[in-house]
Image (tube, rainbow, N blue to C red; front, side, top):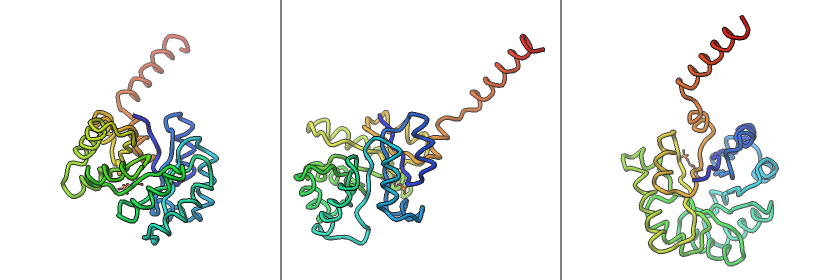
Length: 217
Ligand code: E4P
């Protein structure tokens, strides 16, 4: 399983990229709005940091296929690594089909059922983004959805990649990897939590103390 980082914050993207663990970036309208930087400027800056797929979403206020297609073309023109993120609606599927036909990569987002993922794949989506955290929030096991989609795509030999999204904790990451997600898009704070372990810190301190005692005292 690969990692994308799920943020529009440049510092976080830079830090994760320097660690060498991420191969792409996902943004959404809420994440872009949080940074307060105009969409195109933000995307250009991100594309200058990470050399990998960068998902940029059509405007939340654009709900018709025609509008999404026009915006999708503009997003794709920003940088060669752009992936157009489209919401899982009937109009979104139409836009996905057209943009795919034009050779533009797409990420169908806000997926909450395996059937939605199947429809998106049949409309030609490059990626689907099932949101496990938001399902957990309403007492459905989000990881079950990841498992179902991965299995469904395997049985039908579908090449669309599964991005586990709405990842909130390190255990989500482990669960998604075991479930067979191709990618998990993870917020920076979860990457940091994945690194930390008290026994690692304790081990470093012990090595330091033993080294100092033997060679520096
Ligand atoms: C996915 O692409 C979304 O940007 C994201 O994972 C949503 O996460 P949230 O449910 O924590 O907002």
